[in-house]
Length: 189
Image (cartoon, rainbow, N blue to C red; front, side):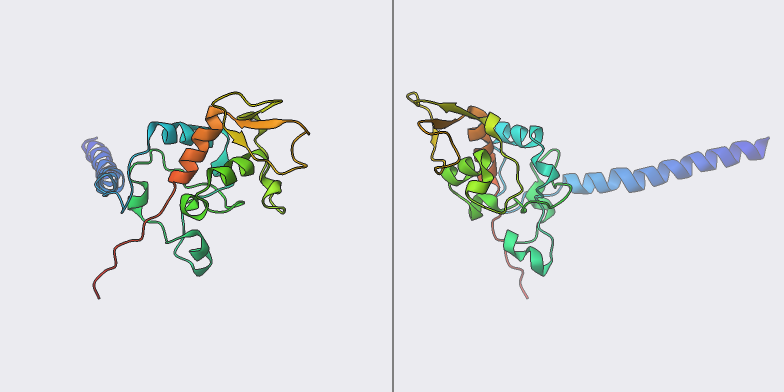
């Protein structure tokens, strides 16, 4: 009976030590990660846009992690832990069906491009398989004062109609434009 207590106690303390070594120490080390160059917390509008990004399921098709592979070079520099210092949770993505968005704010800095692309992706990228997000826009006969109109190419909106971006669309565009990677400082040889 005495040996059973020693065995159970040894198993418990071994488990506890392994749990701390594998769970607590790495988490503590990662929490000390300093933000990368140019990484700042999101503004209120960008944070609302991030919420739209999550709600619309954008991370199911788009990644936000550039791997250190030659073929990923078109998306930007390889991602580092500091790139995600202010992201909770991190939106790394699950599958790269669409392009990586880590650096989309630098690659496509135009509000107009993003708004048209969200309303009708195939009007800009003919082979795109990205779905349309028409519920992020209102189609009106005439825009009101203060409305942000979207210059959708002819053939993608009904004649005599004006596409107007909702606040959710504008927030999402602000978030996408905030996704920019600054160059990493070079290491001394």
